[in-house]
Image (tube, rainbow, N blue to C red; front, side, top):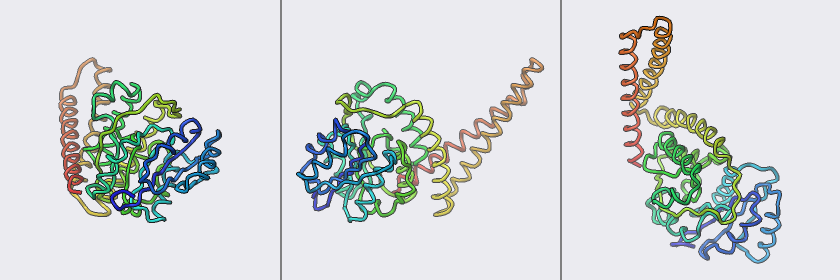
Length: 314
């Protein structure tokens, strides 16, 4: 236990035979349950975990016969924690990229009651740019910006960081069966937390790379996949939070922002066609396009400001 709260470590694993033993043996003593989810590994991960269960009575194994993705594995662990009345569930990857030394910092905001969900942030120091592979760093930065917009949590960064802690209240509120099951799970979860007006806090942690881990992530594919996910989740959150659950005027600002953006695109296409055909730039069309673009930007920025203010209230 930690601060009189039961703690479960949710450990998703897929082909982690080289790292999972290290994760198990370095787990802090105050962890009450090690929920290891073998996500249909094809190596010796299951064999290693099964052997460790003979020596560690804290381990509970969830064995997926079919690969469900890292989000699906985490959801299985969260459901176990929820059903067994665990106070706080913390996610620690099976590839040992999450330093146990940072666990107290991740847990404290949730254990102290200042947050419902806390997550690691590797980007808050200058070390991240030097230590994280550049393509991952820039990809993470792009997705972090998009996640701010989609989730409404403008104070968070490093959206792809999976080192997290979540309290019992949140475990019960979120529908884990509908959670995105692949690498966009942290982004999807932030959107769902915002809809439920739950408090989220970033915690500085140090990046850990090149320790023998193997990554299955294809950055160029993940960015486009998660960006599309975030676009859909943005509109779903606005509808769910500001229309269905509690009406808020900011939807009009988003509506006119989108409307003027569409008008801008139409005017831009018309401008290009006329200029190409005649060689002359129609001034009225150009001014109308500029006015429409500025209107779209202003309406959208005000909508984002109101959205941020609403999220800051939680």
